[in-house]
Length: 163
Image (cartoon, rainbow, N blue to C red):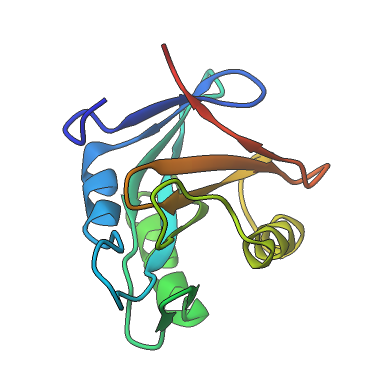
């Protein structure tokens, strides 16, 4: 699948998640292809499709002032990204929702670090969100990998492309 098409992945418990081409392109702008390029990240915004369990990631936030960016770590400024989440939710009359997090890794085929897994489980326990799960994207140098995490069990499942 090309950037122009976005990503379409099979969810862990059925249905699909689509990452819109615009959101994917924004994340790919921050790939750590050069030496000494710091990690980047933000939140995933989108919608749950009425009448089924499909989810669409329409937009992502990108690094903002106040975010802490290092070669092997990214910590987002909670307040600034939350302002965007709240604004999109209001403007959409409650249909644009917080769906999860994304960040980059300086490796071709990214896997979550222990720090990532601990952070994702904390978000599943503590963050307020609609539905049973959140999505976590890591943008590597060659691949973009996506995990779905479940609120009830804290299980993290790597998603695979449809087809």
